[in-house]
Image (cartoon, rainbow, N blue to C red; front, side, top):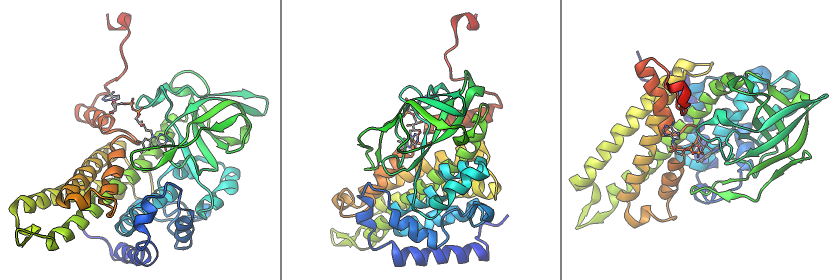
Length: 388
Ligand SMILES: Cc1cc2nc3c(=O)[nH]c(=O)nc-3n(C[C@H](O)[C@H](O)[C@H](O)COP(=O)(O)OP(=O)(O)OC[C@H]3O[C@@H](n4cnc5c(N)ncnc54)[C@H](O)[C@@H]3O)c2cc1C
């Protein structure tokens, strides 16, 4: 067992760090407070070959590993936290599901624009009555000649105000086996976006409304029975959320450490007070423990999809560590940490969201408990007659 990066990984980390410091660090504060998708960053990253790191070269990607993509998130976030969202978009988000299961015609049509950073794809999974219970989704896709007719509503989709195409989870028929997904383009008749709403993080989302929205059959990504495939590639998205949570926690920690080393009260630097030293020791333990779990899940996946269990453990650990460390960093920096003069409060708001998004901490713990007891715990209410 080896806990060091390989020579190739160290070289890659160093290249990404130098790129991020040269091109992204300067405007990091302003970018964090701009809800718009940073297309200019996506195009810079595309030129730097940081989009599609794990996609095959045949698909226009780099043929790298999941671990490479995690290294990219870490290095970019250390210079500009908001820009790490672009690494997520180009490597971990719905683009990964799309590249995994799209037909060659679908990929030829949309992947080049997505990987060039000129187009955004947004994921529509959650509905007003189907959040954690995602298999309760009701958005329907009904065949009609050579088309499908989509009806339903999606909420909370990241990047939805800026997206040109949407990967929408739909129901072709009843039950788990009836679920699959389609691609819908902005501007399709019967598809409307509401005015944007904001999350606590400042990110914006629109409600996506489909009313007899007709799409061509060529836009089907996964037909009935596609749910399990969607969820296994969604584990990649979860690892990207985990990596950003940890990287944002580390960003806040580094800022708080530098502050504590120089800020003086009572005639001494803050770092000389034991009450603060122990906070840093606790933060270091949380960050390093979660990082090993993240690396395990990514390294074991290599060029494939990560295990559901290892992903759940890594995401829960990184989400908790990232938020707790960012929050403690705000405390260490006092009013300055709480102010928008620094990015520490931003890191705290962002890490809070990942405890809910992409599988809440509670749902991840449910998954982990199933592994512990080696049995499935059905979360659904039992019908009175079934329980008898
Ligand atoms: C920042 C952010 C970005 C997002 N981006 C997207 C996106 O791009 N696309 C998309 O489709 N959706 C997105 N979402 C929505 C996200 O997937 C849902 O918020 C998530 O699945 C939880 O659903 P809910 O918010 O409806 O909460 P609910 O499911 O209503 O849950 C409420 C609370 O109850 C807990 N709970 C529910 N069931 C159980 C149970 N069985 N056991 C224990 N606790 C339980 C939950 O953990 C939570 O704390 C995003 C959300 C956030 C916050």
